[in-house]
Length: 385
Ligand SMILES: NC(=O)c1ccc[n+]([C@@H]2O[C@H](COP(=O)([O-])OP(=O)(O)OC[C@H]3O[C@@H](n4cnc5c(N)ncnc54)[C@H](O)[C@@H]3O)[C@@H](O)[C@H]2O)c1
Image (cartoon, rainbow, N blue to C red):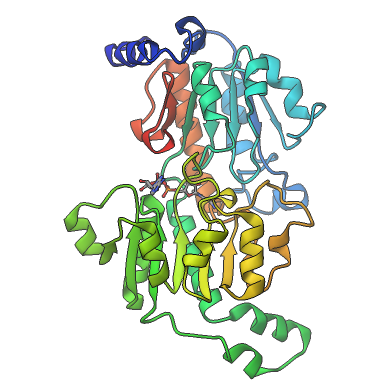
């Protein structure tokens, strides 16, 4: 990929900021020179489930369905799920890989140390959305490109959030447990089951997923609020029927249900700590499919135990896979699952196609769709800055 004038000017701006010496910053500018590339994919392993569905491409065994295509072009393609510790499979390939593909569902944590060791690395692709498993500042300083498949699982996550909202509002899970354990106790469920209609729902972050959720909530006749660093276009806001709340802390006490839909960044890490949770309505329901580390883990568990949080549901944890003793596994009224919402079969097919498209562009030296870049030419995408 040749250096465009925009790239040159970004380079000059960055160089004049004096943050990192120019030679080291751009020593690995994205350019797939001719020849075989070593591409490594880190995905979750499917074992006995792998053969159950030919469209199950998001696992190690499915390898995004791009093995034949990559190998027919002379590239080497290694896939693994073993990603932690100094002797893991991923670590063996760090020194000579060119491209690393990972998914947020089974993230390959790309630390500054790994980036330093990865002398040939040019491109980090996220098969999905959310690249917080990568040290983005270190990637930028090393001149790496980080890109994701923006929009690939937006619908999948918004639908799952609808599910978790309803599961918590209706107090569904204890009822289901009764059904399978031979019990029958209507009161134990009904004393804290409500209708969704008429409740105030606030989304913290109203980008692609947040907006879709608001659109899906509209027919339920809720009172809809959103907080974001950007206000929506008035026409869209009217169509969606949600009110902008510039001050997060002013929105929280109004909400019966809060849904987190923002990326994990330096600004959002630990945003929901003890003090912020205390600002919410007592008994608030929280759904978080964004990232676990936006919450203070222990503060959430304590608030569920005290009743300050009436129910907490989501599929994101920190770290992932989550340890057996993670407090969110044991807190009352939780609707937690492993990280699954964005990896439905439909989502897998979309992000696999997106990865193939981006690799094709990388081999040809073409630009990616602008919205897919998280780190480009030493700069982080605006919401990560
Ligand atoms: N659980 C899953 O399977 C899954 C799948 C996809 C995405 N996600 C998570 O959801 C997040 C959102 O995805 P998206 O596609 O809607 O992204 P998006 O970029 O379209 O929207 C993010 C929104 O958050 C807002 N925002 C960012 N920082 C903010 C801040 N400090 N304060 C207020 N608002 C802020 C942005 O302005 C934007 O409107 C992803 O970053 C990812 O972490 C999870």
